[in-house]
Each structure stands twice: as structure tokens, then as C-alpha cells.
Image (cartoon, rainbow, N blue to C red; front, side, top):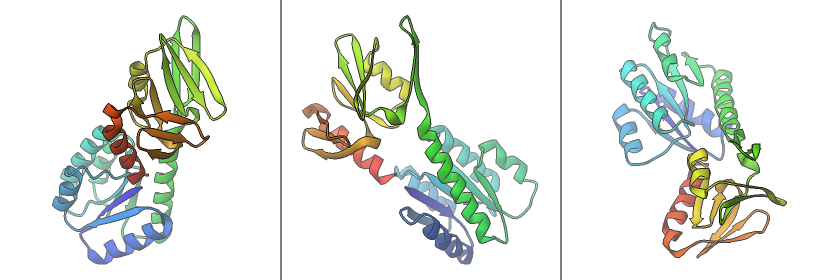
Length: 233
């Protein structure tokens, strides 16, 4: 999981970085002391799950930029640091996870990170729901290991095997999920990246040992998507 910190005061930046590394030991932390370098990093396709943003300079610009990021990456979690100021009311237009007041208190920083991580985990608990002539079917995305296209049917598999067969195209299933955790590795298969154990050339192995094919035409895209998923966990 990538975590970014924008803080103009180097002493505070160091303080924040220490707490973040302690609270999220498996996270990859990047610190910026200029908003320009933050924007350059993200423009170069760097994706951050949590951003801690100082509002000490160009606060309205930072908030507008954060709103645009949320449009691109709905799961991103924002934590702001600021001294009390009327701008605090503008901040909430971007739906922050937490707002930290300065001087910083360690317990508040820890609480903000804990909430951001909790919200990220909750975002995975969304359900796949479809209503059709067969009735209403719903299952949490996290319980789906992969889906298989079988003629006009879509077979949905979990850890123990087949969960349900429904009338749906694999392309329509991916539209429901918006491509957040599922990746189509073959014309007949889309896998849940949360449950991929390993990827070898032209084959994916799921956590339950199921082996699925990766077509030659989709190999590069599948490998790139899996690497990107791992880097941002």
C-alpha cells in the first residue's frame, strides 16, 4: 500500500513519516515538501491509497486537486493537516477521512491512519448483486475467486467451488465491478486479484490451488495488472 505525505515543514514531515512507518509497517511511504512534486509523481501514474496533505499553502488548490483525484480513484483516503482556519469548512467538499490539527498529537495521527485503513478494507466488502428473471442474486466480491464464461452462462466460483450460474456476459460482470479487483486473463475467465496465489507464464494459480489459463494475447496486460495490484496493496 502506497502512502503519500505532503508537508512543507521538514520537521513535521519527519514526525509524520515516523508515525506512518510505525503504524503501517508494510506501507511504502513517500514524502513531498512541494505540491508540484506530488502532482508530478501522481501524473507519472504513481497511485497512493492514503494521502496526508498539508493545507498551509495554496489550500484551495490542494483541495480542488484532491477532489479530482477522488474522481479518478474513488477508493483513495485523504487526511488533511492544518491550523484552524475558515478553509476547514471547504475541506469537507472532498470527503476527507480525518482532519489533523497542528500542533500534531501522535494519538490523533494514529487514529487517522487506523480509520483510513479500516475504510479501505470496508471498500472490499461490497456485494455483487444482479436482478433478473431468475430472481435476485447477491454475493460479496471478496468471496468470488473467479468467474467463467460458459456459452450464455456465467459461472461464479468461490473457495469451495461453484457458487452460482447466472445469465450474464463476462464483459457485463466486469462493468458491475468496474475492474477494481477483477482482471480478465482469458476470453473465458476473469480472476479476483485478491485471491491470486501466483502467476506463471500463461497460467494463474488461485489460493485454493485452482489453475486458470492466461491467453497469450492477454498475458502482458494480465501481468501488468497483477503487478500494479501488488504494488498498491
